[in-house]
Length: 141
Image (cartoon, rainbow, N blue to C red; front, side):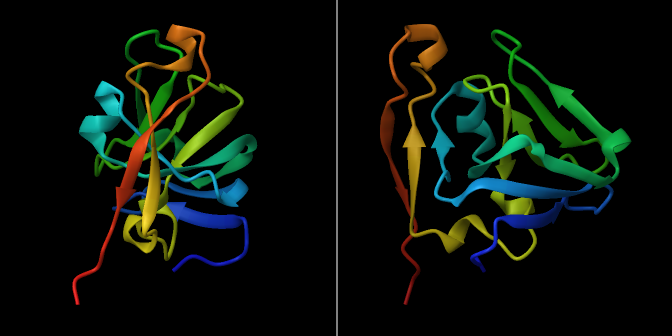
């Protein structure tokens, strides 16, 4: 469950990749994205400054993927395939961290997650980032 601290340990599914992330603004930066890649991946992410992401083990087990402009770099465990984080396109000095990889955190811990318009990315349009909607989780009784 979500706590008050901004420093979180995390790992991929198989545990080969372990890391520590200092969240820039706690969970206030939580979001999803509508770009073609994020839409297929479906991850909920939260932000960490580049200096706030530290590998504890397994950095050599990571593989990467880039698309479109190639400026965003997406990291995956080469063993279990889990997406752990990516270097952001709109702010290359920060990482978006998969909340499902943070110890004790689930995307379903958040009743509402803002969804950003990645189809009309600010780096393509020159306009401010636009919120496309909200993803809601309503637990069954």
